Length: 276
Image 1: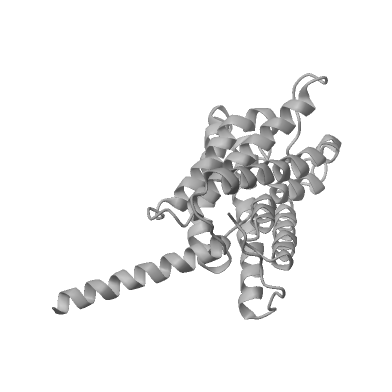
Image 2 (image 1 turned 45 degrees about the horizontal axis):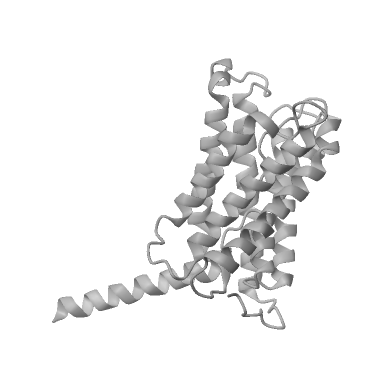
């Protein structure tokens, strides 16, 4: 499967820039909402209610998951709502997205995360001595790198597998796709927030790490940049080469446009049936 190479050129038209700007805005909102929630529930922001701390992991997981669900609903038909360089890399590697578009998406996603992190720090009374929200490894020194790398790799793989299962053209039940992806993100956070803070998204990890108070956040950053990319590539390969029943191409963007055309066709058929 997946023997459909992208076109030789990537048109730099209005749709291209709309899609890239959508990735920037979606990632900005994702990081702003979710990292703000994490900082507030963990009591990093001065004046935050300490009553939220006992349920911080659950609250953070729910916010990350449902925010992804909302953003896919808002931006899926514009850019495909990748909001994650690991997802974008998987789509490029399986020839569902042009490499130039993928590179533009990744840059936009990283800039969105950096911008959101700067806004959080500037508006929450934080500085480089108090800023949090970064991902860091934890546990015994002899196992923490392996533990963090494997958990980030596997959980990102689970997310990307869910994305590919959602856009698989052999499926007709696609309406719950965004919710399934949101749940995949939420479940990953339930598992990994106590271990690494849960990255599973290189852009999400990059922004807070650049402003973090802890030097460890920048020292550990390589794990949260590399492991999700490895997990994404593995999941994309496994799904496309073993589980996909038919070849498909076009990525999330094509999926949403295809869905819109199918819904429009059904409405037309229903309208004609009503007239008869």
